[in-house]
Length: 254
Image 1: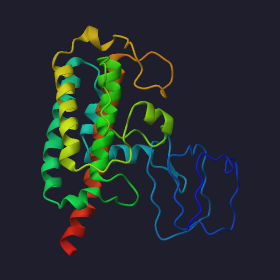
Image 2: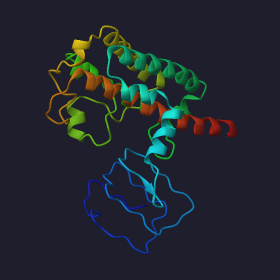
Image 3: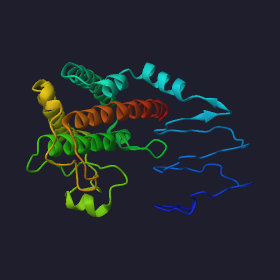
């Protein structure tokens, strides 16, 4: 059984030399200043949000971002929306891409939609996470609903267990795709209503609540909440279609 380190600072500033790090997985960690020097291997996978990435003395940051934007143009719409019209256009595109991708996913056996590819969230878990994201940023922060959180929502992996329990989230639930889609599509319809009724003045309104208790105490304006939801939708759609390709290949060989 491989060793696992969680919420540890024992590697901060460490120097690892002449060691076997093959198959090492670093997940949900701050890797600012990480250096990999004079190392070798058959393949290397790197993913996350990085301000600057240098490979063999070549800054590839701009290239990677440009290629992601080319392959997934909705990332640009989500990231750059600032006006009412731009938020509506971004949500139009997000609705369309998920409609197409859900049709694609339904062609797979239900069991495949619960499979994790390389330790990432399954397709169903992705829908649960996006449900939670919109519950928090739209239902709670923007709309201040009395009961914004659906129990099938799946929070970010770093949310403390007691915070999830306080929100009455059933993290160990194993719902079907359709069971998750019932509240998920309802929340997407809520987002549709919000952007349809949006005004320029509303964009700068300070929300009366933060998304959830674990979030920092600060001002949350409507435009930031909408941007977070749109970016979450665009990025997790990217992950979902990446993994669907693997699942589809596996289904063809079974």
